Amino acid sequence: MSENKLDSYRVLLEGGEGEIVEKKSRFIATVRKCETEEEAVAFIEEMKKKYWDARHNCSAFVIGSRGELTRCSDDGEPSGTAGRPMLEVLLGEGVRNIAVVVTRYFGGVLLGTGGLVRAYTQAVKVGLENSVIGSMCYGCELEVVTDYNGIGKIQYLLGQRGITPTDSSYTDVVTLRLVIPMQMEEELSKAMVEATCGKVKLEKIQELYYINKE
Image 1 (cartoon, rainbow, N blue to C red):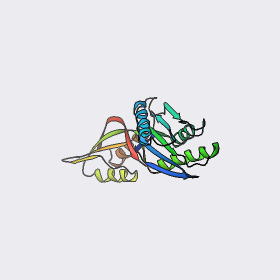
Image 2: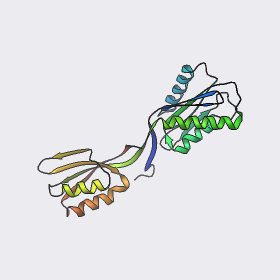
Image 3: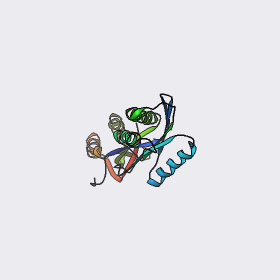
Image 4: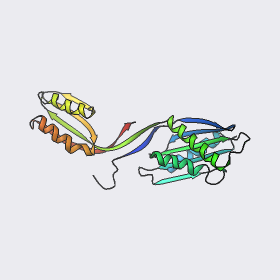
């Protein structure tokens, strides 16, 4: 594996919303998948227009497979009480290519700095709970060709490891396509050769990232 590849990283597959109420203030979290800074900025502006009558629309985002780009904004709340705590939740969860806006409708009661930090943090957590998160795993696509005597043994090995072929073809031979984690390639290939007494042909088609739902 090349040095700049990650084994896996968490990504947002489907955004969601969440809301909490703290001392009459409403905190509405909107979570959105964003793969560039431009997308994140546009999303934040969209939320500011949607909730134009709210007191604050605080935001945070993490872009890039390694979280190379991070930004956050308190949007008028006391410094460090909103954007930074929101960003810390995203970084703590390890989710990439994600943006969140927490909209606050002020309820007339001051929360204090500690109360604000807790409220914005909790709102983001609720928003994430209502989102769909998955993992981008680095792996490879294998083509497996064997005879009808060997396929049962190979299917047993795959079942043990929770692998479902992405494609299969039954002609005079059996051909399977597999997508597996990179770290599994050597061990699985060896196991298939041993199980079929060498009557299997393996070819690595490509290396790729693939999505695993959590």
